[in-house]
Image 1 (cartoon, helix red, strand yellow):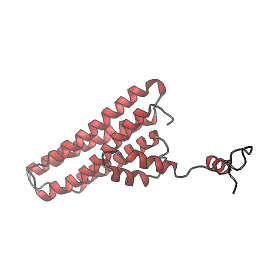
Image 2 (image 1 turned 180 degrees about the vertical axis):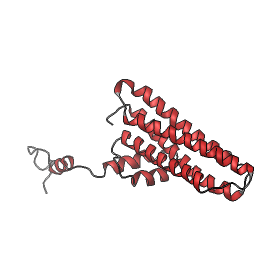
Image 3 (image 1 turned 135 degrees about the horizontal axis):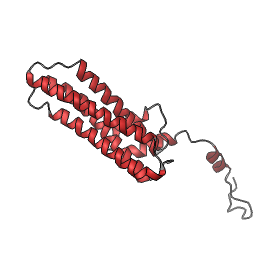
Length: 191
């Protein structure tokens, strides 16, 4: 095969590059997921949840919304579990459970507010909206942590069940906060 060094007057051979530029890169969203998850709080969980996410993940905005949706879905599921599947035997357990149900409801509200904000980003209010999103997700994390802390000194099985569920929610919520920070750093609505 000839190359440009063999015939200096021939134009560069860029046919393969034309094809690769023209053809859609179906791996681009997954590449963004991988590169974004590397520095998340919980990289393997981030990669697992966002790689299997069925919606769009091609931009930092998509990823932030996807991460919040995952956190919101898990928070709702944990809240339902606490309300319907866990019963406290002692007064202390019942009080901790009641508090945790309230805190998880608050966490769901904060994540819902965040998702709504991310869906309606506007250039002129982008910084303010991103500040809101960070604040709300941070509040959701605080509620989740407080819920787990409330189970100190109760039955080990009850504490273990609750801690496992809520810790998982807190991990995906932490990853969502990271994705929001990445979106904020990208500084754009269409990126």
